[in-house]
Image (cartoon, rainbow, N blue to C red):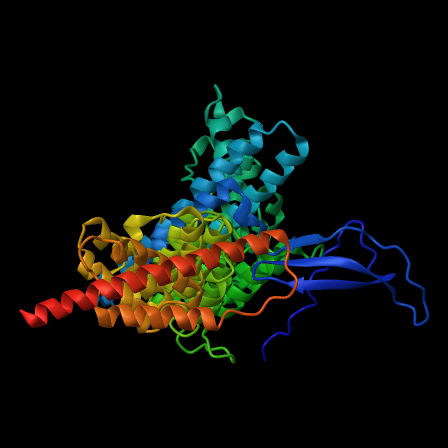
Length: 597
């Protein structure tokens, strides 16, 4: 039966009294907001002042460590390379590639550990030094666990070779013997050194040891020979010279069962742990993880690491690697995902809490076939688009993955920001990219209003090159065609300009509020020496003018400015009527003359 999870650790927030007052909180993708309410936990209570602060609780604080960020960045490339390993590779070639990937992961961990160690030594603040030293210990434990999993699960060393791998494992992670050996062997007379026999007893798993015949009468020799003959009691008497229980385990196997089979490892591991601790202390989390590995219980290893470690990096990448070794195929979770995908999703979610590491998280979501795309869509919508450069990165990611709704949402957000900053060209460009007809209409109205106020268009290059995009909305079509009218007029193509202007009004594409502007634009064409508008076209313009003036609202009492505006409008109407009447007369005479001839 699966072991039940223990109670989660309690996080104490300084300054918050959760026993006295009720708490208010809100979950986010990578953090939680917590504050006290004004209500106490008593049934009848008055509102009392509470803590005035809102606390931000992050679940993945390691992503903000400068050194650990290198771990995340470097391992990202290894992860992508692992996903591209050819599935058709089998046997030794595939196994060798997986072992190489595992070693690459370990080298990244060790590099970060060494850098963190140097930072801890150089730290001027004792508290910072302790914090960095704690991180060094965690990284060291991670590399220790990963190395053991590599030996047992990936390389799968057979009996005989297994102990050689375990000897290398202990030699790599037990540093005390190396320093003691250097001290002893570097002295003038090593055999007379105080730690000479301690090195012989404690360092047999790490160094070859020869016994000159002159030592035959030495009192330490009997203990040494008993250990070499596999006497476990003699070895246990010297356990203080061994660093830890797994050092004791490998030493014990070396002299009692050097050809140990993998299936027997769990027995030796459990008994070595019990003998080494002797009931004086309880196993640490690291001990439980290593013990689960020696029992070949992969899922327990992952579970214990998830509880003990402060972030999801280790379990996510180790589980992914073990899944590629076909060791986790039978373990699916109850909520539609397997263990590999669940852990990768958690790790990627943590990366999205960081202002720059979120870009790495995108690739992890890509390789989660069941829930990755949905999770990416939810997280990418929460990325703050602080700069246009960042927005373009997010947009490019969405477009590459055909995330249509997210593309539209981002473009609309950028369009809104551009409108607020009065950057109409950028706003129009984003609204077209979003294919948002309503917003394109809004921006087009702003362009037209801006034209009425200034008498000229801004962002002419954009409007001149709208192309098929102008069909997105009627207002945008009108804006593009109205600009085309101005271009024709500037090129002195008066007949084409007149036809276009009239079609804009009669087709209903031009907003009625803009009709007076269009009729005013017709004045210079009506006053040309040659007749531009035909009699029929002039009648249509006159009809538009009458429709416009007949539907003008009746105003009550008006202020001086309104009266002045009405006078200007009245003057424009009179000028238009006069110009239209003159043009109609000229057009009738001209058309009659042409018919007569």
